Amino acid sequence: MHITGILSFPAGPGQVKIGGGMIGKGFGFIAENSYGFAIGDALDIRIGIRSTTALNVTDSNNNALGTVSWMDGLLVLGVSL
Image (cartoon, rainbow, N blue to C red):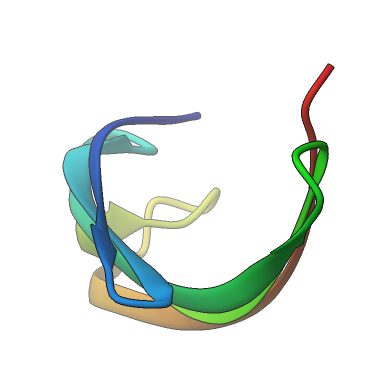
């Protein structure tokens, strides 16, 4: 389960998002940065990267993994109706 509150704000041609909340059974946080462009008023295309960190993680065998982090590449296609 992954439940986070996210704050998003524009930064020039980019967009920055930061957030925190529950990742699995512990606390975690995310940071994301993306850049893109709009085509008309209806289409937005963005690429970016997101980093997620989860604290005090345990796996399905109850092994303590400690702090776990990973990064994702993003390709976003936004359509306004």
